[in-house]
Every structure is written in structure tokens, then in C-alpha cells.
Image (cartoon, rainbow, N blue to C red):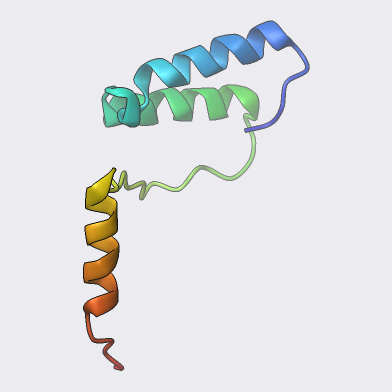
Length: 79
């Protein structure tokens, strides 16, 4: 996103994104809609954001250590 010089506009944009962010309990489709709207408002002409957006939940706490251990124990395949 392009940086705006108006601090109030920046606060409003960040609050809107924070309200709909999937990591904070928001709906992913609503988050993508808000992102597309903000991108369109920021620059009307230019490349579109990627259509293929994936949200990945990463393990937290001790589960993160277990996931790391299982990933490194897997034999690597050469194709």
C-alpha cells in the first residue's frame, strides 16, 4: 500500500484492516474485499493484487516446536 501523508487517513485505514483481519477473528473474504477497495482507492490505474491469497495458520506455543521437529524429521525427496 502506498504511504499516505495524512496521519488521520492512515489511522482509519489501519483500524479498518485490523477490524477485518483473519488473525484477529475477522472474516477472510471481508478482509480481501476491504483490501481490494483500499488498493483501488489508493491507485486507480495499475496492477491488480494477486487473486490467489491464502491464509496460513501457524502453530503457536509448544506446538510450534513439535511442528518444527516433525518437519525436519521428514526425509527430503528429490524429484
